[in-house]
Image 1 (cartoon, rainbow, N blue to C red):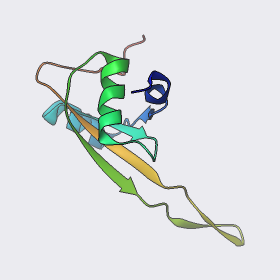
Image 2: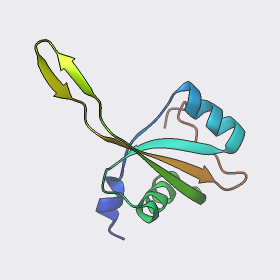
Image 3: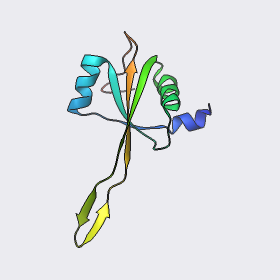
Image 4: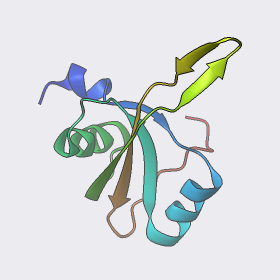
Length: 98
């Protein structure tokens, strides 16, 4: 796979109460990913960037909501999330400074 493409797949880690619970209990990490990314590309990108071994990838597409902005109706953008399960003993720590 193209290395430049893999660098653009992961947009941001999702740091929330739910994602922290997933990381502690199931060794899974949540990421906001590009809407065109495939599971194989997400797996390759995580392994390339964080030097860990990935066991499985689950992807969720979340449709953007319609919201009112003053008088006009607007629409939030769609979001694609990836839940990446790491192999036993692997860990990604976002709280440390790199």
